[in-house]
Length: 131
Image 1 (cartoon, helix red, strand yellow):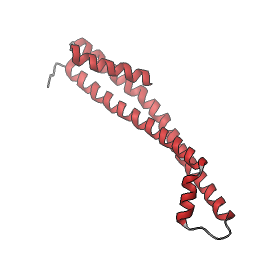
Image 2 (tube, helix red, strand yellow):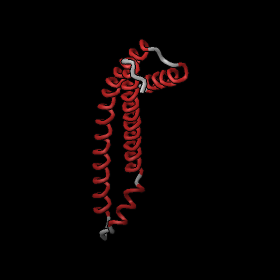
Image 3 (tube, one colour):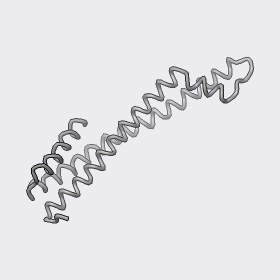
Image 4 (cartoon, helix red, strand yellow):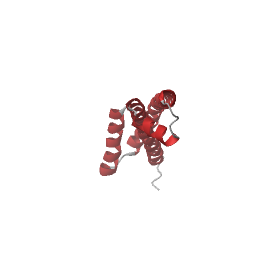
């Protein structure tokens, strides 16, 4: 998917550096629309992955929270529990995986939006509107 995005980026750069004919604009409008369809499918996968990871982080935090409370002779304060949770390697690893998944999803969303604007732009050129 990254390769597709880079190729389409190059087409945008090429069109403003060298110009674009009406025929090319029509083809590019279709190409960007098709790219949006492809990205939409990938976004669905990334969104599900992100949601599942979020659920996993909550489950891991809850399990470790219970472990901390049960192993303590005296109930630790919420601040102490929070500090222990934040420093736990399993929790931080799961949180890092969630953060990475969300960043990837958001990056692809930005490309989707860019390609939507490119589609509209090239469609306008193909119709002869140069506003």
